[in-house]
Length: 73
Image 1 (cartoon, rainbow, N blue to C red):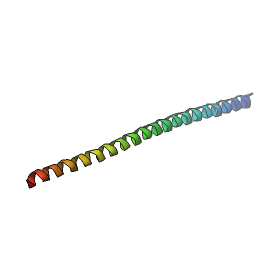
Image 2: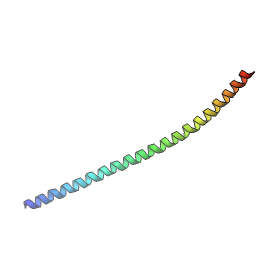
Image 3: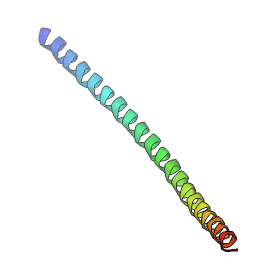
Image 4: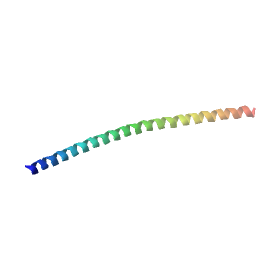
């Protein structure tokens, strides 16, 4: 009967270990999904900032040309 108890404990330990592994894997999957979502948001923001930078550079160039024209007068 003692061996049966040891076998039962071993099975319970193995089952508990499998459950903990599944919980850990699920947590990792949630973290991956959250990081993927954050990456997509960051990519969108980077694209917006690049476009804004381009517009501001053009505006700056235009203003500098206007200043140059005023200085030449």
